[in-house]
Image 1: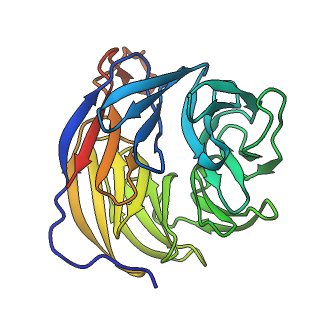
Image 2: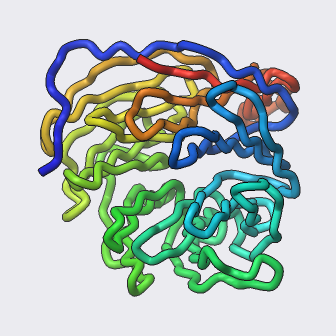
Length: 328
């Protein structure tokens, strides 16, 4: 049986430190190594590797055109970086951080995870509407994907249950696609109800609950067995990551808030805390016990727009990139 959080009153996470790393470029997903020692953050044309014990940069993996996410496969001693601009996945050695080569994926290769059940790195390609599966031991010089699956819409983040099912946010369809990774087929599609443009995804594997961050400022709790919506909560604007750990659900939002929800049972949840972070801190990595949360951001500036055009996306100020460290 899953262990649920006790109702112990107020949750008290706080900003505890800042790793000042600098450098040019934006950022996207953050990924923490299984031992919690190294943080991987994509920066567009390169990917930073940070030792969290010291907050210092230990490696900087170059060779990307538009990096988005990192998946780690310790058993293969390899890491995988999705590159949306050239539609590829860059492979690197986990010990030396040396680049080993690239394999093709598809246009707008974005979020990326490792699915233990199928032993495949799964890349979700928004522009191509595809999931691309790559074997961890693929030849980095001449290798090809093992499977390409049409998802019927634009995927964002995904979560694997470890038993052969992967749940994928389809942002432009307001739904979750369920993929059977044994057959590599879509076996169900579940609407996200009041949640629109689902982007962020995490999972409580024991209780079989999905936590879906949506761009209309709603967090959806969904039953991973039948797609039923169990609960929904308000969150901040521009969510780009959710995480589950030790009975708590975290939603990081670019507006500068971290919403925390407590799971009391599989069907009962309550708000625990809204922490003010910093503008732009929309992604995060959470350690295995929820003790440390790492949130990339930088100072932002609005570029000049033109008359009648949509408001331009804020740009990071060069040299101001940093990692916010949140802890209890």
